[in-house]
Length: 250
Image (cartoon, rainbow, N blue to C red):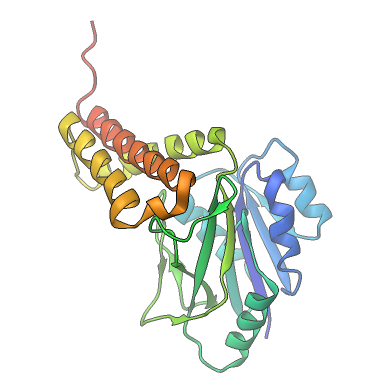
């Protein structure tokens, strides 16, 4: 029962080693890199991963490129800042050997500025990551891609660790990139926005994260996350507005 782990990366030297080390039990580890300049490629090869260097077509298409390189009967898709614990490893191996070929949804425990987030809509954050090769593909979305498959996944119990957003520079950079990609996707689907809608959606996002999803129970980091989510929503809507209604040139 062969397992392929696929990872997409760009400038992930600070985190990808821990990801690779956590899946040493796999038969092959494939990293698809889109132009790293921080030594990510060299580090991954030193750690024994197969690395393919390519351009950046968006999250969904890039993950499908990685999937097409996999040779294992089963595939585990990870982000560079995710880690498989010993307990999750045992569950993954048991799932592959069980005879049940449904994809597996893993509960993901994410950190924000070092704090595990148990509320704010971040827990339990089920993500379908283990599947039999040939039974699933990723959507072609530029961002927030989904794994497409038939039927319902089975759910595992042990969490996948997600060490995300270690500092504010990363937070700002990520929501800037994601909001741009999200705006382009929305425009391609015929969506439009306005300044009023951007403000309203940003405010609602804050209230949903901090109040409705009990982000206040995550302390200081819960408030900061709610603000970050609101900003990302606001800028996505503003960027969509500008794409559809460009500024007047003097």
